[in-house]
Image 1 (cartoon, helix red, strand yellow):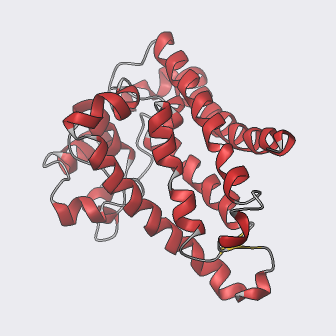
Image 2: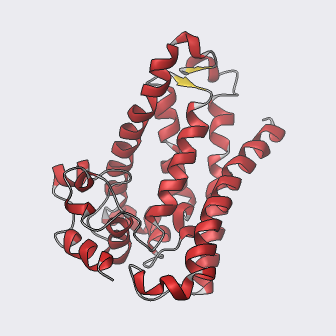
Image 3: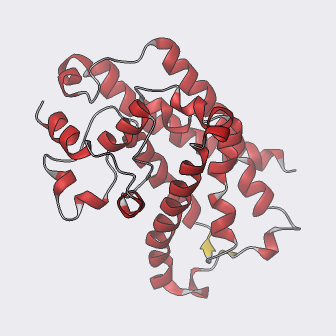
Length: 250
């Protein structure tokens, strides 16, 4: 185990979390709290113990996430059997860029089905209840997982590494986008414009209102980036569009 490399990866993952979630929290919950509070999805704000719980579990999640590339990519036993590569010319620039939407759909699919599985009564309290203690989430909730759920969430990395070619820049760039969208999903404010949930394109894209409803009511709205699986499987909440309109009318 290369601990120096491990702490380097942990610093990268943790740095992205604290910078992106920290900026969102500073703006929406400290500096502009009074001005923006009328636009908050749920009127009330979490209390200090909620923030501390979310940050504490997020630190544990970060420490777990950091093991994954070390165990899979840097491991001389496993690494050579993955699809990881370093020379862009091996698959060309078109594939390098095409890989990102492919990864996006793969991750959204993986998240939807593992998420629904974790809502099974026999698994919910063990795996997912920790995350759902944030019934009114803040940006710090983005990585607030039980350690076992953190392992499930990290499972998308081996899925990538054993299915499609993954360049050394794919993972850091993709997960930079992931934490950014994840923070938005837990932001407590809606950034998309009025009418977005009913738009021909917007109705397929997940929003902060959509995921906030999931935290508030525990059922429905299981997607991450998209609402494709929610709409196909009929798991999107019936009051989603109405709630989105109410939030944007504030």
